Length: 152
Image (cartoon, rainbow, N blue to C red; front, side, top):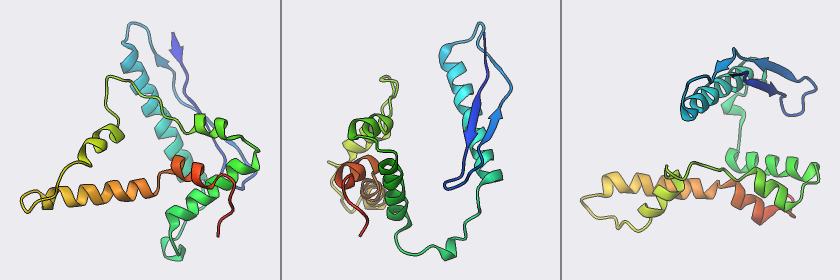
């Protein structure tokens, strides 16, 4: 059996859809996890190359304000434009993972109870600060809080 990875790309607001197909991946006689890993790698590469080739370059110096929050508002407006209901984007934003492997959220949840001391501050303070920043930009939570609102 062979699997052909396929990727489409359309820049936000654009009217052109780019279609890419990679070389087939053979699944014959291979472990499922190995095939899935190769498929993920192939798809990720195609998406990256599509963005690199077909999207309008951004000049970081021209971006002002909290670009992460602006991005979340833009995504929220996209969901609202297509008249999705909460249960649809909830499913869309849910990531299903193999239960044998802990998610980053599971690992981070154990770190929240760590007390910062003189001895561990140089390691733990940056990690906890990053967790706090990541939670600030949790898009799924943002959508729950702002589904029926417009940006201020």
